[in-house]
Length: 190
Image 1 (cartoon, one colour):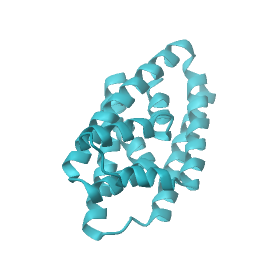
Image 2 (tube, helix red, strand yellow; image 1 turned 30 degrees about the vertical axis):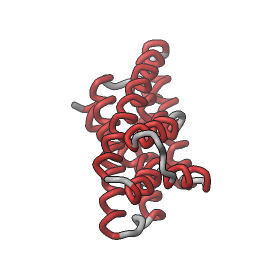
Image 3 (spheres, rainbow, N blue to C red; image 1 turned 180 degrees about the vertical axis):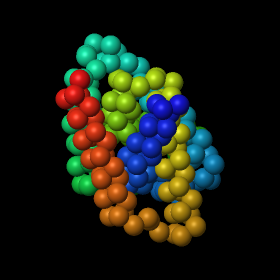
Image 4 (cartoon, helix red, strand yellow; image 1 turned 90 degrees about the horizontal axis):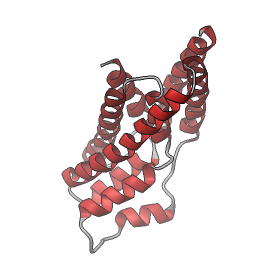
């Protein structure tokens, strides 16, 4: 349960203002929101399953205190990445707007799958899985990401505008700094 709650919170915050969240809003403007959410859920579940399995391998190979220090440094990096922010390139925005002969579900799912490879939410999930329960981390990270994307879709649809991006980025970055410092301190004590 701790792995679930921690993963949900960290990934939910990491996803706020992320480019895949912007993609979700763009896809939802063109396609049915439920179809976009289903595609996001499937793609996220697959990417995060691979992430927790990779995290488990890394977790077995390294001592816990080293993992905590590396994870803490990674979380500080995620804070900087979050402050920098993500933007959709013109090409990514065009792909999100384009009609496809393939099903919307497949197109959106594939776009999210590819967008998440090497993204900060994937890296955060790997980091969390090195020291926490695999199933709880997988489930929490998947639901956290889908919840953040659902929030963006819903708010974007209702308000017709983006969330105040600067405030969200600063809040998420602060949370990453707090998690990072706590992990480093825990690692140094070990």
